[in-house]
Length: 452
Image (cartoon, rainbow, N blue to C red):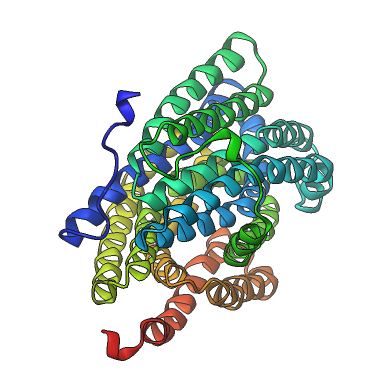
């Protein structure tokens, strides 16, 4: 396919300020489109199925994030392993990693989907989802789970492309899938009046469509390690390596998601309007997050390939450039979101009470989200060096520990949404302090001071 031609960025050579931008922009646009799956769900269901349906989709959002992170961290491991193998010019190793990823993705996706289907009601009930919202939230979550095998397959295979330096192909793939998702949302909700079932079905089908396209791209590459159906099998030695690197990253994401589920249960105490407003705001702030997170992934891939190629002298510059870009992106987009918060929230909800709650959420997140972007660049740089367990331990202490403490002790005394959401910037500041004190040591330990 001509649209997939010449999509690589030369990670190991050239001016880093330019190559990091060239690598990251398609990655950020890809994440925007990925979010657009969920945002279109929220927009269509909020406009055409009502606030209760919007609250149902929002109530299931933290659970779908939890399920995604179970396999999302393993995709990070594939990114690291492919980038290091290609940096070392070991195409045979890259081929084995790719085919093991392809063989294990669908199996893992089926297992996660079965888990989500079985535990959907207990989890949503545990989160305190209001009775009037629970049936629709369960319906959305169960249909979404049917698409998880496609999501896992796409995530694993797209990670191989990203580790190779190709961020444009995933963008093209999700552009096509995103348009199809929006079209199906409109048809299923407006024409067939399917409500939350319609948007969930559209999202699940789009995930499978994305998986098919990324597999096609990998099978048509002009590379020695391209995807070949007859070579797809699970190399258990490599699978153990993927789990060794990826499981801590999965745990890291799961801890975030579990903590957010706990926070969602606190938001639920304010009622359906607060749930709808915060769900709309979370959708908007997700775009701030991915604009910064692209630079985390750039730091991870660039560090991994340079470490594999033993180009140690450029690794500190990779970190510095990624940190500057992530901070500027977070501040600029966050401030814009705060300035236009009422108009943006009005795209999703019409009730004044829901907009009020959403405005509180968006203001706090918009002003402080750049701290999260800075934290994530540290995370990506350390994982690119091959350290995977350490960032997970830091996350557990700084994110989960602080937020659970805050929600359990401070929030009950001051039952206000602003007090509850202050747990976010507080935890980011703690993590930044820990990362700043440790990153230099881990970089020097990995590459040896004399090598720099």
